[in-house]
Length: 375
Ligand SMILES: Cc1ncc(COP(=O)(O)O)c(C=O)c1O
Image 1 (cartoon, rainbow, N blue to C red):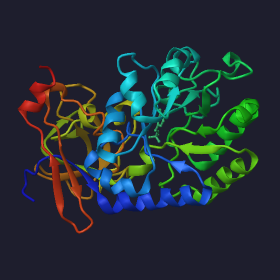
Image 2: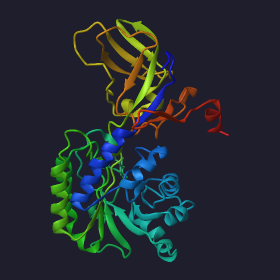
Image 3: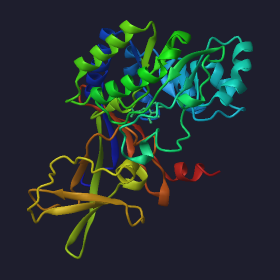
Image 4: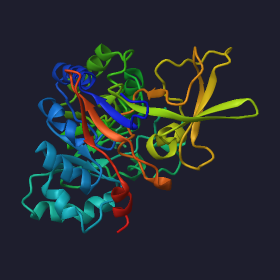
């Protein structure tokens, strides 16, 4: 690799396959369906790897529905906070399940669903008013949330045609947080369980994290299934690709101000890793630590001109040098699906590192990609 390697998102096939095996085991042992949410990861060149393991995928827009149809050959479970009338017919024919965010939305489209002849099951997202997610940006149960119907607004008898309930209130959560959510949901919404066929427990299940208690998840799901005759879906996104790839960057300059050294990179936190600024969190970097005492301490600076386009601190055993590679870990979830060309910054290449070690470049970006977004 030369000194000025291009910035690149690199999916590691072997790690993705290991995640898929873990998730599939839960599916089989708990007799549930676990489907990937495209909002987290939509690198369709990797879909042939996912395909043998998944029965469907979760979409949140017509574009995601179409990508699932075209590149996985599957119908989607589609939930969106609101559907646009001009898009609904295409969503309907390409979805096996459509989940509405409000009773008004369900009523608006129920007749279309009935008369279209499409085999598609309707569900309703409820707001469980229970969430342990502390960051408001990611908390669907924050006060005044627009996401899902609260219990007080549900009629005792669900409208004809509603087959399922959807509850999403986890974020990067373990099985114990799921159990607590499930208990609260069960206590409050139980009266509806004999009116529906399925429940979708949304995303946020970090099943593939090393410390995730998979046995516990399986036992919680099995126990719920033994109490109710319901089909169960989980639609995590991040878990499918957790730890399954990196973002490779290069140090282009090192600046210093008031004792703070910033290594300037050929990637941007704002444009390529926005969750690092929004959450915020400090992504792991290969070879770096958080040690307190060290002179080789750096911030990493993004290449946009946003003042806050940096993360830190990172400590290295040796000083960084211009030309050094910096590898950010766990950069497959919520990265490529959220990137922008803000400031016209260069978009990293999109690559797959095959199990045999070969690096395949799936996409590179140039001036045309920047220009063609707007005309
Ligand atoms: C409705 C819904 N389903 C699934 C997901 C996927 O969540 P995660 O990637 O955290 O598993 C999200 C994420 O926001 C969501 O809003």
